[in-house]
Length: 322
Length: 223
Image 1 (tube, each protein chain N blue to C red):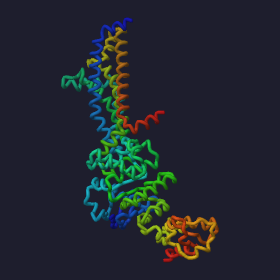
Image 2: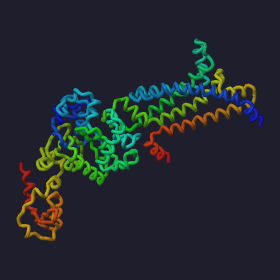
Image 3: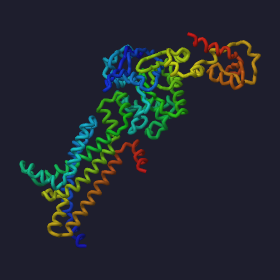
Image 4: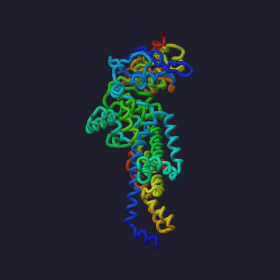
């Protein structure tokens, strides 16, 4: 869906040339969320901004749905790509509904249709349209404003979304809420998303695949679990952190490590878990109750299996060995 | 009492002089808006050009109006317009440039860069950005510049009575030359009231044209 081929950006500075992005090639599949992750100055934002041509590539190609973007007028190109930035950039002179209607208006939609679309998107992002459509941006909280920013990017239903650290400015509690909201929405919409982040936890939570950047180069492109289990080099290992095993726990669901034997012999004092819980909860209960195994129950409270320490360790070990 | 009687007796003349005065000010400010606002927007593209233009504008402001009229007389005499309405308009227009250009430039420059990125990233052309985002947001500050220009021009035009441009300054110049305190006070009073009225009505225009979403911010900033 999005294909980058040997994409490079070189800046000339008084001290010589700087390769901000160095021959990056990657392909993001349709409906996939790909997080570009790395420390500041690693080239991830420049890469993103080359896709909607806010930055002109020095060399290399970008294909969107098979089409070479060099052949498309930049203004046309941008209208077909949703774009969300960290500072949100809602226009203060326009209401929420007008902000969402900016691109539709550029494309010549009439006002009734723009209004309908704005209300539809607000509802999708859990902002009651009756309450929010006619507010001005300065009457919104940070989390609400960022949701409107996302709604605005989705206005003309673009297949591709580019998001530049969209949730970085939110406080941790709001950030979790907006991330969850966004994941639920993405479940329904299945957009192809390129998402820039410097936060490994956010990346692990949001991404289908993570592209790690270091000094302008793409150093590893893998699913979160694989990235955490098998960092490609020392840089990736240090970036994902020494607690990478803990981070993996959130990616694995109880259902994946559950076995159905021996449920009767387990200490009933420790709480049971559900197959949809992730292993963070399991690990916490192991530690809290000193248990070696937990019961696993379904929605009606029937015991359907057990999770043991050994099973969890085995699951973590599988991917850890090269 | 004498002055009051003079004013009441001369109301039609005062009205006429006010209209003359306003014709000079409004034509001068009108031209200054048409030239100054686009210039103020254009110079946001280059810091160096902006510095030069604003510097030149400041130099014009330092020239005493009476000296500027003196310079204009020989130049405009070549087309037979050395004194009267035309030099008054030209001088007033020059004085109106700086506040209008400077406020436009500052207001556009101060538009949050994030709005610029968002607008470009969403596929707005340069003109659409100006028309839908930058100018609406800058408008209150641009109008504040126009208010300053109008008040300055009401003062400059008063001096223009000395080069035969008419206007309310005529009462003052005659009051001085004839040692007539009644005319002097009438002129001063009328000019003061005119300046206040013009400033106040432009202020209400400024408030009306301030985008609603910004109005609250501005009010909060005032407090």
